[in-house]
Length: 66
Image 1 (cartoon, helix red, strand yellow):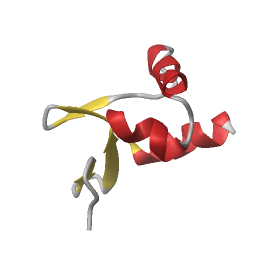
Image 2: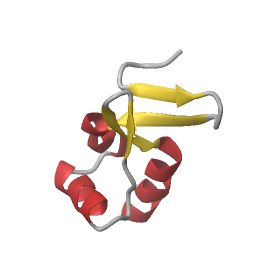
Image 3: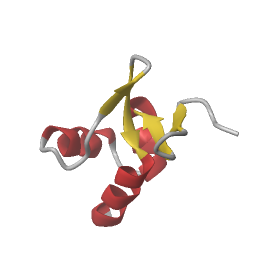
Image 4: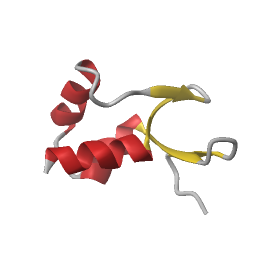
C-alpha cells in the first residue's frame, strides 16, 4: 500500500516521493534539500505532473547528509 505523496513505477520497480515531503522523510531542513537539488546532488523527476525524488536517491543523499 502506498502512502499519499508516493509513486511506484512497476516497470523499473522504483518508488518516488513528492518533493514537498522529501525534507520530512529525510529529517533535514528544506533548504538542505533545495541546495542538493540546485547543485545536482539530488535529481528530480516529474511524474504525473508532480516533481518527485527517487527513494533510492533519497536514501543515498540521507546517508551523506548525516
